[in-house]
Image 1 (cartoon, rainbow, N blue to C red):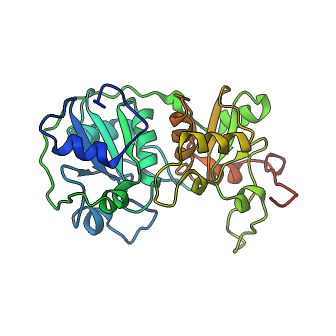
Image 2: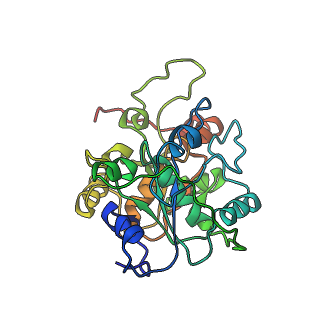
Length: 294
């Protein structure tokens, strides 16, 4: 496989061949270590990337250019700032970006969606991430490569995101099927908040549930297309109709967008405010629960 056809996922073996084969043909490649979690006391660049990463990889931070608000914890990065960030990473319009994570797939999935949202569709995720790379016995590095800044200008595709107002209209029109990647307990409303100030559970009316964890095999790789399709069928989600993905803060929803992309659904928008914003703004009649157990 060359770089002319951009897949949602690439295997560790494919990436190894691209990085180390002298006969490999294809366009420019940029590997990004996107390791990140919502922990303020951890420097992921220092604690993970600098200690070990895939050769030629640069570190990409999901916190760069982002200003969280009370309503939207995972806010979108400022466009101009993000564009300069991409330029500093040596990425141009023909660069095939490969995103991976050293902990879970969450940050690489969010990175995949962000790049596509901001107009760079030549991006794939490393299936199984860094853990699969290590399990396969492939080489790692501590070297941080130097790259030349580009003059790449992003052209955002904001049709790949939805805001609160768009979701309110969607609940009324039912034009797009709403997918929710939170756990069944959160989605159904059976999980009660531990503290009074915690967000109540439940879901956006009309939403269907595919828990994020159900997308993966035990080794952290995505399930086969056949098994992914079964998940969508079980949740009564029609891939031939418009979709929109939601979760708690706009992170794991990107997993549902990617799973649908694996199955040929090119553009699935993500509600980037997700449940954290919705439950703070919506009236009680716009919060649904499931009365029966799963």
